[in-house]
Image (cartoon, rainbow, N blue to C red; front, side, top):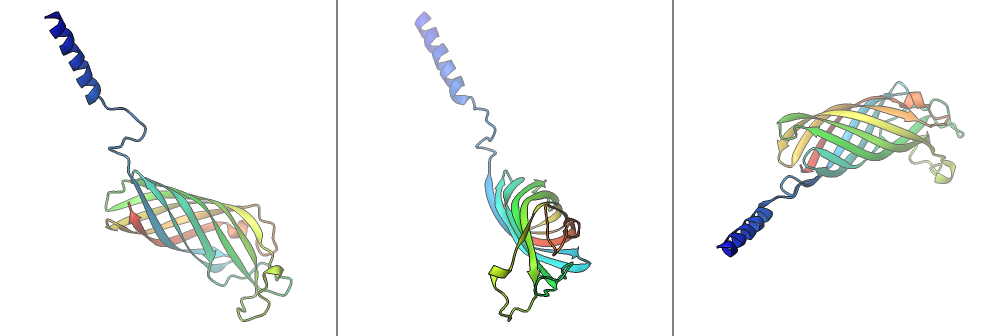
Length: 201
């Protein structure tokens, strides 16, 4: 009888151990991994001109709510430089990019909000905007770099299970620029943006 009781106790302990679930930071039942790519158009005032930035962002999505990836944008419109360049150039070029981190609140709701921050760098240079000119020689085109932090908020709409559209606003904090093309304060400013995202959310 005693041997039978010990056997039952051992079986009970084994059953309890088999049924117990290990507690981890990312449970296999809850952890999910997705990804996305998003073309983006931004509109902003730069040097009192309309600055149109075209680019995109993309990355991995963790548990439907956290995303980490990269983003990059380039100035696609005509914006005058603050000063004329060494060959009498009137316009500027600008581009920036970096690490992009995002939090999506209630991603399963039809309409929801997301908050992101881009941290990186960029550069500006003079440009005459005469694309047919022989002047377009990179040896004469000095790029002046800067550091940028750009927080943003978006209003997202779930169109399908793999497509979202978004409207939002961001603010560029530019620092470290030393250039005759522009200044930190002139490049800093608010943007409104339109985008759509394709991926596994």
